[in-house]
Image (cartoon, rainbow, N blue to C red; front, side, top):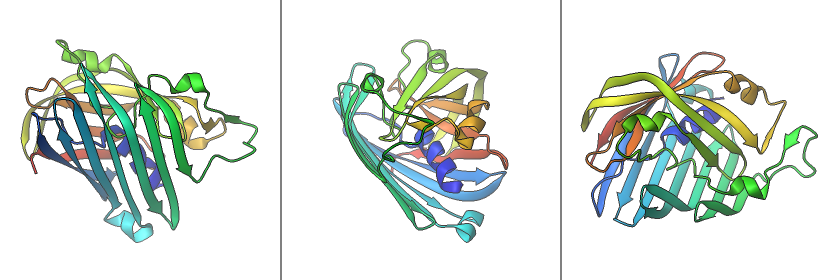
Length: 259
């Protein structure tokens, strides 16, 4: 269970902040379940005026390590056009309980154009499986950098948009809405305000309608706090709270600074 929930959290926080041209920054996250440490994640971003890349890693820790060992890495590279970060290649590899998953997804101008995943989709698919269609692969983002948002002159606009994820297996929208306004937040390298948003999972395709995990998350509210990255105009999550059947899973940035 830790692997699936942590990877969802990874999709919501797996990036380091943007910075000035030709610079690198690093973020580190503490992952907790019902207040107990179960994992950690770290990410490094490199940014130029027209290109960006992010590399991250996730591992179980604390009590979770006693139950099962989880290790994962992810990366994305792409180009920057105006206020948009357009992925070109996203990769993920992780193992948990002696099982492995791998994804290599290519994008072009906001559209996913190819994906190489393991394990592959079941063929023939289960009767309740909703397949991904070509039209659903347009205007999508990867799970690694998809929540790096540049809202323009109104930071509150962060909380008024859906984020269309595609990871090679599934298409889902993370539908953001206004939360509890601004919140104070501190981490190594950052002290200031964060914008609190609420979010709900809206599955689109690439999933089974009988999935208990999907059914549970559809009816729950996820909390995300976004903090500004210097003077770049880009905001990124520093706190995520995901409901689970055993209690809240939280990811909290403990570092938001240069390496």
